Length: 198
Image 1 (spheres, rainbow, N blue to C red):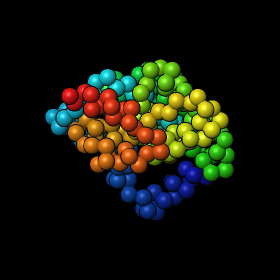
Image 2: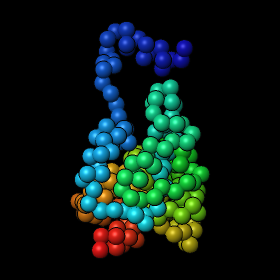
Image 3: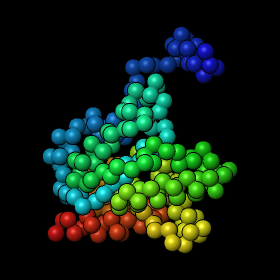
């Protein structure tokens, strides 16, 4: 028994953990809201947008704790993306680590890992990377400026939270969603959304 599992077992025995409380990630929340609810409130079809669904290394791992989706080939975000009309691309880095633990002490590792993730998404035709984790969003969005310093030919890619992409399909505008606050502008993506509305 590890020190963590022993501590958890002690807390359960002493009644300090309320196991009736469910902790949901954003994907599970949207699944609970219901796909029908999203479809009936959809105002904008995002057809033509190709999205790389990025789960990162911890959203679905370890399965023994998360009990959510497949740890190696998750598909739950793709199912939600399909409701918006956007197309989820098949790519190789959807469960790879962005280096979140190294964000402060070893930024060079994060820059390298973020570049590999973004390059692979672009290689597979993505217009945007969609995430569910704030740390993944920070690394992939914010680190692109550092990537560009090292590689001036780096083509920036918008990084959206799943909630922002769903919000676009529900008719919320760029400012309501806070897309104007991202480090990497979402203009190229918004052009596609606007052209679909016309």
